[in-house]
Image 1 (cartoon, rainbow, N blue to C red):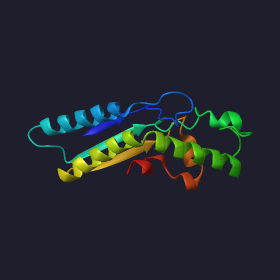
Image 2 (spheres, helix red, strand yellow):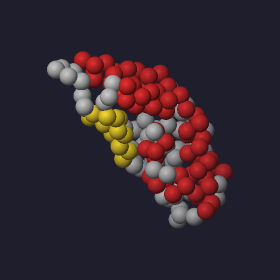
Image 3 (cartoon, helix red, strand yellow):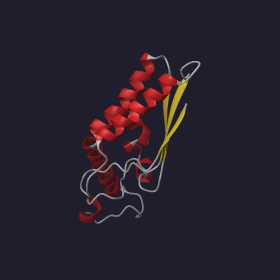
Image 4 (tube, rainbow, N blue to C red):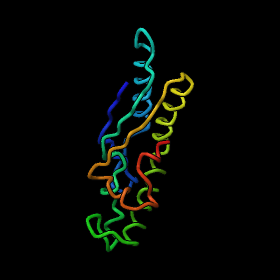
Length: 141
């Protein structure tokens, strides 16, 4: 089973409200229901493809107070800002990410292979610029 999700735009909360954990709970419930109703047998695999702009690094107001911008050349100062924003996003969206992890756990109990593929978009590409920020999808394991 192949599932696509894009443009979630999780933020650090500094630039407005982010998506609610309830949306992720409903999303995960719908995937579980669909997988349980597939006939004649459940899927062997569920692959969740996140098509960019999941972690929105660009929209943070942290850039306003910095003398560095997302489009500037790579450097230690920019890396520190990206880390700070990413950590804020992970903290601000902890419950939503827990829902995705719960989907993985459900699949494991059902003996269904579960995998997340993360495709970088224009609002989250900076997390791949710096090794310390890791690939975005690794924050979903």
